[in-house]
Image (cartoon, rainbow, N blue to C red; front, side, top):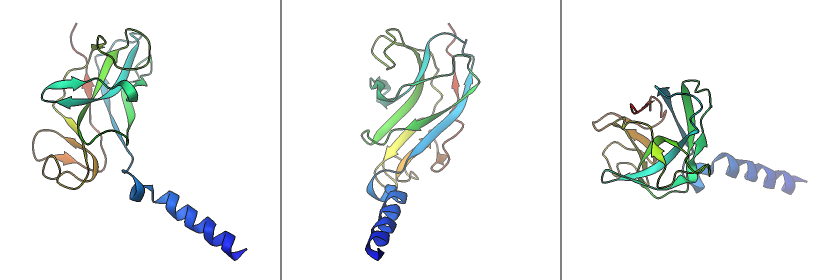
Length: 154
């Protein structure tokens, strides 16, 4: 009986410390401004390198069709280290993913999501895992909020 309790206790410790075995989980949140409802809008985390988006629709998430004004998006832990952005897009083929040909409806907010393997990678001041970098020394490393997205004027 004592062996079973010891194994159960070790299992609980291992599960509660998942960041030892993988990347810390994180979520990003912000406000949505200027988007009209019922446009088949979605959110996606996409790679962003040298001024271009990298198509990877694996992390798309449906936005409330009535656009309550805000969002929270869980960030993936199975992507390469690097720089990313959250975008709002119109899902032209209704497959739930961002693809070439889907229209990006959000403006560049000047912020990057930076996924790093160790402290100080990519930009000075970043911490292991997900960070928000706004192009200066202001880096969010724990609570990733105020990642607001504004609609492109159409």
